Image (cartoon, rainbow, N blue to C red; front, side, top):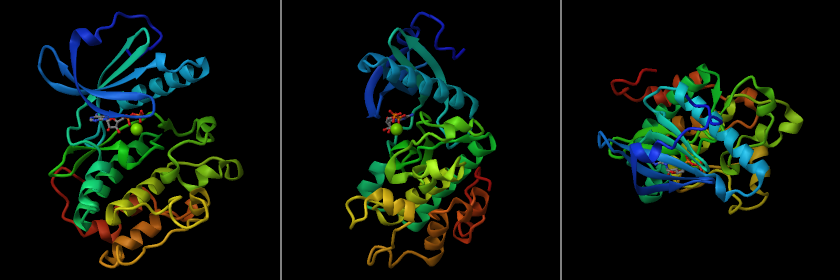
Length: 292
Ligand code: ADP
Ligand code: MG
């Protein structure tokens, strides 16, 4: 039962032992949690409501947590973190998740500088299959970025998409009008939503386009560190380039897919199904268990 407003004793500490720190987000910290009975290791996402004094913000946080838990408990996919339990202590919320022991894809790319085309393809394929699954369930992630893409297995580059704190069910139009997400990965129509009206699941394709760009070269397509205009205006205008020498060795097929994913006008942007059928992704032999 995921009803947060029901008072229940905190069974979390009775069931799990907290161990190493795994990461930190805007409102949550994440630690290894070991099941006291089985010894199995999980990740516990812990939200400390005490840290947020403003009542309004707390309510928003509770709402995000409620949406995240209800979405995650409905989704079952090899490339999406699975939820194993939800607990509430007076001022703490606990979400018990699959442990992605390899850390964030962000750190792996920083470590390697960039990924080979084969590895980038492996990453993109898993993520496209994950968001195709979500979109079929009517769910838009809305916060796809390298910090929210975790590695279940670093050597094999097996990924788990995490952090559904901003995810929404499509059709709840009021929510879709909210400006959210992380600027560097955010689609133009999200930034201009007041003019453009509602947007849909193509925002995830845009963010994945940013992820693919970074995988292939090691730096982002839009940034305030580049020449002006400000990042927001670069995004709205779909203004980015493939600077030499970093992109010189990348195949034209890969560049074509990036261009099709980073189309500023969502009506011209490639869909998830079309991306899965793109020649660059078709070039790989699909590992068993991944069906397109
Ligand atoms: P927030 O909503 O505050 O951004 P996240 O869910 O993104 O919180 O978690 C914050 C960080 O904790 C992640 O970027 C990652 O480094 C780490 N983390 C989250 N979930 C897991 C997990 N299941 N396994 C391993 N590390 C995780
Ligand atoms: Mg996060």
